[in-house]
Image (cartoon, rainbow, N blue to C red; front, top):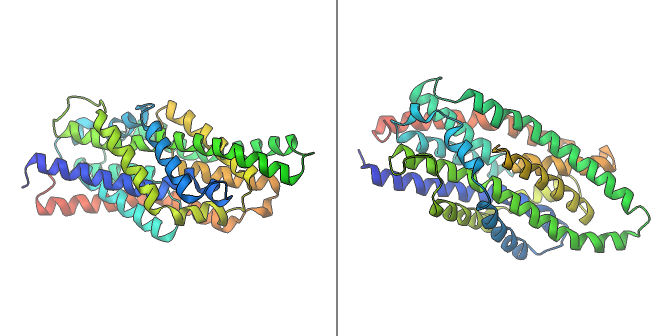
Length: 336
C-alpha cells in the first residue's frame, strides 16, 4: 500500500494530466472560429486563449465547489483515496478516445461521469448526490445547448439586419476586428467555467486525504490548473478546431463573432450559477444556430448528429470506465 502523501501527489498529477487533455480537447473551442476565419494566426490565438483562460480561472470558484461537493456525497467517499483517481482515469480515457476521433465531446461531463462511476463502485448507488446532479448537471446538459442554439440564431438574425445595407467587404473588415473581442470573451468564459472543474476535483482529493479541512480552493491549485489547460491548448486542439471551424458550417467573421459572443454569454451565466456546463456543447450549438439562421441546409447536420451521439454517451461511458478502474485499483490494493 503506497503511503497517502505519495498517492495524493499521484492524484494531483493525474488531475493535471486531465486538465491538459481538457485543454487539448476543449480549449480549442475558444479559438476555433477565430482561426478558421483567419482573423488571428494559430500561434497568436493560442497565446491569447492561454492568457485569458488563466485570467478566467481566478474570477470565481462556484463551479469548483459543485464538482468537489455536488456530484458525490463527500461523507460517503471520505474513506477512499481511490475514488478520485479512478474518476480521473475514466475521464481521461474518454477525452483521449474522442480527441482521437476528432469529436468535440464534453470533458466536463466525462469528469462528472467518472466521479459518479467511481463513487458507485466504492459506496453503492447511494454515493452520488442525485438532486445536485439533476439540478447542476443534467438540467444544464439539456438547457445549455438549447440556449446556445437560440442565442446564436437570434444574434445572427439581429446582426444580419444591422449590416443588411453594408457591402460584404466592409462587413468582413468590421467583424474581423470585433471577432478578436468576441474570441477574448469566449476564452475568458472558458477559463471561468472549465478551469474550475479540475480545481474542484483536486480540492476534493485534498479534503479526502485530510490535507485541508473544507472545500476551499487553494491558490496553487487555481494556478496549476490554469497553466495545465493553457499548455493543452497549445499542444493538441487542432483536430477539434477543424471540426468546429469547418465541418459544421463554413464560418465568416460575422458568424464567428455571433457564435463566440452568444456562447460566452451562456457560459458566464452558467458559471455564476455554479453549473459545470460544457463549453463544447455551447459553442457547437451556437455555431449550428448561426448557420441555421442563414438557411437550414447550410448546416452539415450529419456532423451535428455525431456530436449529439458523443454528448449522450459521455457520462455513462466515462462512468463505466471509472468503475472498472476503481475495481482494478482495489485488486492491486491502491484503492480502499
